[in-house]
Image 1 (tube, rainbow, N blue to C red):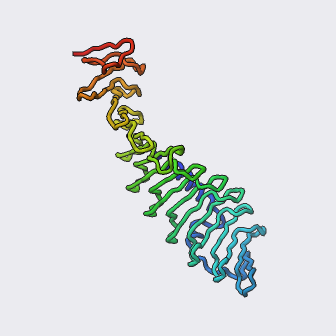
Image 2: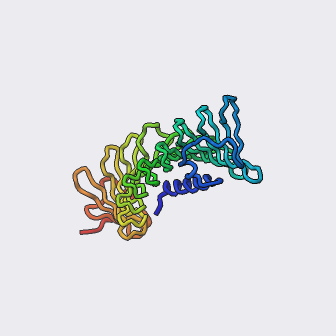
Image 3: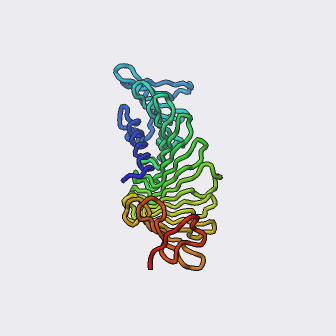
Length: 304
C-alpha cells in the first residue's frame, strides 16, 4: 500500500513525465550531450545575437511554423546550455547545463502560466534525477524527493509549509519504496523542536504499526501500536512529564475500543480497569480497586 508521501511522489513523477512530452522523449533529449546546433537545416533557424560570428540561438519549428524547440548558448562557448521544449505554442520544459560541461544537469517542468512546477536535478548526467523539488503558485518549495542511489525510487521525502519549514519527512532506508519512518513536525513549535509524531513501519508492509507522540523538547507523550497490522491501533501507552507510564490500554477484540487499562503505581503494583461495553467509561476495577482518590462518585470492584 503506498504511503501518503509516496502517493505524492508518484503524482509528481507522473506530472514530470507528462510535462516532458514534446517533439521527442523528454529524457532522451536530456540524456544527449548539448552539441552545437546546425546552422541551417530544415525547420531550424540559427541566430548570432551577440554578433561574435557564432550562432547562439537556435529555433526549431514544425510544419506549421510553431516553435517546438529553442536552444540557447548563454556563455558563448558554441554549445547550447539551455533548451526549452514547446508544447502547444508554450514552453513546457526547460533543460539547463548549469556547469557548462556540455550535458544538461537539471530540468524545470512548467505550468500553463509559465511558472515552475517541478525541478529535477541530474548531477551525474545519467538521465536519472537524484532530486525532485515541487513548487507552489508563489514559487515556494513545498516538497522534495531525494534518490541518492538512483534506482528511480525516492529514499527521502520532505514536505514544507509556506515559510519553508519542514512539516513532514519520510525515510526509506532499504530502497523498497516504502517509508519505514515518517516524522511529522508542528510548524508552531521552534524550528529545532522535536517531531510531534513519529510513525514507524518496521515490517515494511506499507502500514505504520507504531505511532509515537512527543512534546516539543522530545519527551514521549503517547505510543499507539497496531499489533496485527489491520490499520487499527490495539495498544496505547500514555506517559507522564517524567517519562513514567500513566496508563496502558489494550483493545482485545479489535473493534477500536480499549477494554482493558493498566495503571502502574509508584509502589510497583498495577491497578486494572475494564470497559466491557465499549462506551469508553470504566465498568469495573480488578481488586484491590482503583488508585487512591480516583473515584469521585462510585467505582465498581470485581475480581479475586
